[in-house]
Length: 279
Image (cartoon, rainbow, N blue to C red):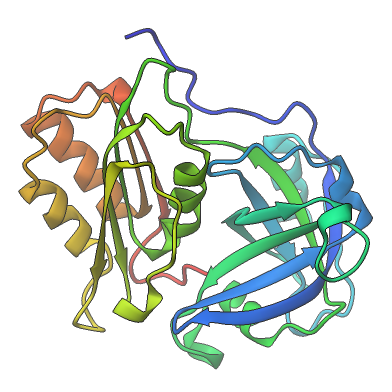
């Protein structure tokens, strides 16, 4: 197959300020926060796993200060140079849904839904998860568009999608954006059976939910084992795997070394590392 660009980059990037418009618990381990603001009018929704960097103030900050540069190296250098008293929290998230102003649920400006995985509360939760569980309408935030990781070649029609709970929003977006003739398998590991969601899945794709029975199990182990045990009568010509770093690396290693899938056909990314705050 021809060489595939690794990412789809946005044509224009700027910091987009927004405020919280609403939030709700959608399952035991997921909170959906809706953010809104006129700045979101300049965002071009790409579907699939459209991701962004989320900037939120720390609990003791009453003003959100941002870098002025948007280039990948420049904004981060400015961010590191900021005083810790003003430096915001930064995490990566996926657009679960985008609604233009005319379809907004909470007002008359564009809206974005963001799904947060929440393990524990208070000090047990990561800073972004804690923020999601305690937000109030009007709280400040900002987004920096990063585009897509999912970027298969047009001729790739047999897909394998694998992820843990942190990748659920991305894989949900990929499925909802997929052409109806796409075939393949999806393995999604989640903390509990009650975290299953209604997803739009092409008729030719089989979705397997993998709820963990042991709350202390390392996330990603079930999904990796499921891929290793899968028959995969036809090898995929495109793979997307995301989530805990060991899961992403392990699935790629297995498919390339044991199944003979070309490295170029595997898009993999480690969203977080076990033992460190993910949210």
